[in-house]
Image 1 (cartoon, helix red, strand yellow):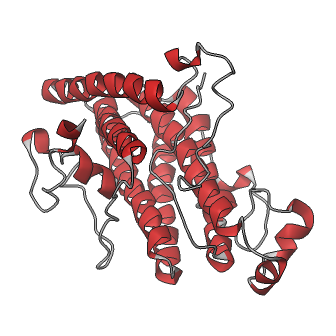
Image 2: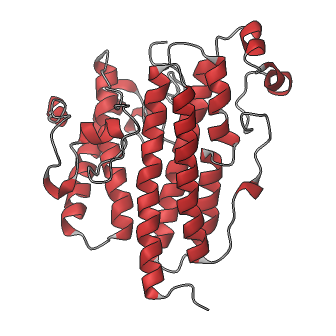
Image 3: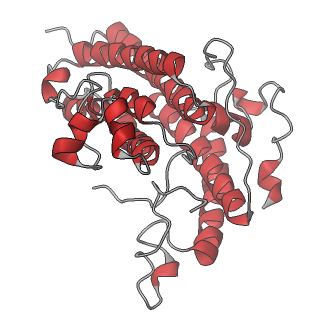
Length: 188
Length: 135
């Protein structure tokens, strides 16, 4: 089971509204490289991992990704909370406003709703772990694109932090992948 | 509480025992392992400067929890590393004490908190994690 902790994993206190930046960041909630997709991918793949290391690692990284969903949602909330309708309109956020108001909703930067079709769970530990490594690299690349576009150093700081977590997670998945490969796990 | 900040001035100092960063450095970087740290372009981690006592307590809590967590992920893969297990437990011990202290002062973080033995129901209190702390 899970228990909520009433705090973020890393502080998010953004002072300036910035609807355009929020629109970019939306992709890291409901997009293919987003935190929600990461959480569901690892949590769905954990059940059939071949040993305790795999079950632990996918449970724990999957859980951390839920904390990242909360950080991304917090960025979205703080960046749009005080925006006027004109500001929403000029950043192209008015179309999201029509159906969702100011609620956080899992779509990407183009408004495409989240779908579990963004990830795979194959039942094969090597295929799953190599997908997980690729997923961390894709998330890193998307964070870098958003950092390049960001005009608020405070937001950039949070994005850099989340990007760094992708680096660490990639390494952990790779260690496990390499070891399973060496052990011959996954060979039918 | 200030003893938890011992590495605050050591941002440019290399790894200490176990090849781990100090808790503050590791926390602002999002990575406790100096050998794994991957800087993007010329961007430096944001320095976190608490503006009041509550933010300072929260930063203490966050950074020790993060150290625990990053070591935890490492131990999932390398369950026989004795010095890492010691490092995990050293941080866990600090965290448990700091959490109790924080919750007594500023209200519950977890639903198991002693701070909930009070009326009115303390869980219904600000700030929520997504609310700016200066509000």
